[in-house]
Length: 236
Image (cartoon, rainbow, N blue to C red):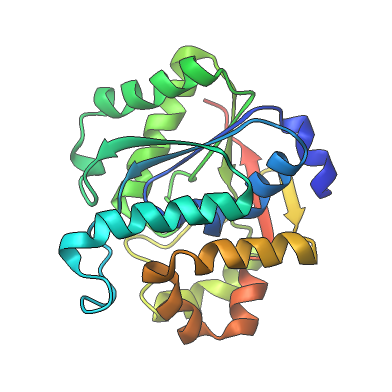
């Protein structure tokens, strides 16, 4: 899919667990959709207050505030003008009753009436329980409301073969290993130089989460690993 074809997705609601999930997994897609004149609404379940990487530079008692500001800068770079917080606790999404999480997502769907809903796959990409919970909230909300088509991040077998081991060695993956997507892709967006530069700038804006990881894997790996965004339609 060329970036210009992203307009066919219509209004996009993008739902994630923590600030920085959106930039890693669909920063290019959101930027391309916004460039095409589509309405893009980014939704974040938590403020990521447990994501402490350097307690001196980013004190734990201020991390939620810091990550709010980082996400605002990130979305400005991507051209996304609408954002909603769901207000759940970082690390606590799996303990939220399913109905409460579904209700929060449903409220957004009813308010925005998107054509496309984008979120994690069932394995949460990294196995994080918050990611997996958000997937189930979105899938259930789309099924119950009939609003939008659900597209989930699709890690292909080739992508996992290349990147799973180094990501696991760096501690980026938790829980069960991610599952390869074997169905047809609904979106395979190869980021242009401009889109990739904006995505990398948006990620850099969230320095409290991305700086150490980017340094650890190296610039070439970092650019290559996140230069293509793939999604598949999930039957709900």
